[in-house]
Length: 192
Image 1 (tube, rainbow, N blue to C red):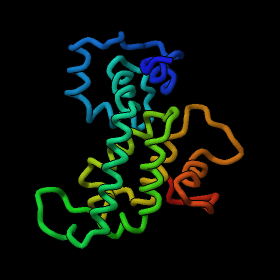
Image 2: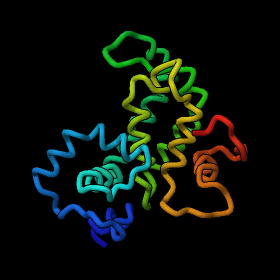
Image 3: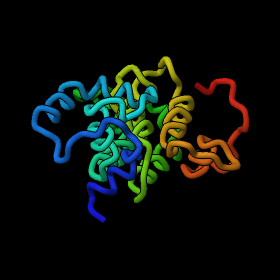
């Protein structure tokens, strides 16, 4: 099976009305690059990747194994920075919110492992991971974020599940168990 076919299956592109031509044109790739932040936000908010050629291409890019590996490395790097005494030193990057990262160390490392596993992932959850890593106002960097690290991890876990998951457990609970949290609450009032 070709890599292109695997990507199409990973985002269920066979069911979509809008498919980007393959290989994508330079014009389409440029539009996606210029609007990457907006496309990531829309995918993270749950818009179907098939809504436009730009969204479909960005979803393919996000679910590509090299992108997923890079995100996994960044998550592990954030945990490493939080654990390191040198992370308090001044440098040009936004400092990690050590307390939030260390309290969710196991979940962040589990998410990194999940991103590197073979198999399809919903681009929604991958886009949410991108936002966690790149939003300087989020819980990875901000001690008083709009959404806590716990809420963010649940949000990402919800988004990683394939479309139409219906099992005996809620999709987000199954994902967090996969991240290494065996006993998860069945009802959460802070879940978004």
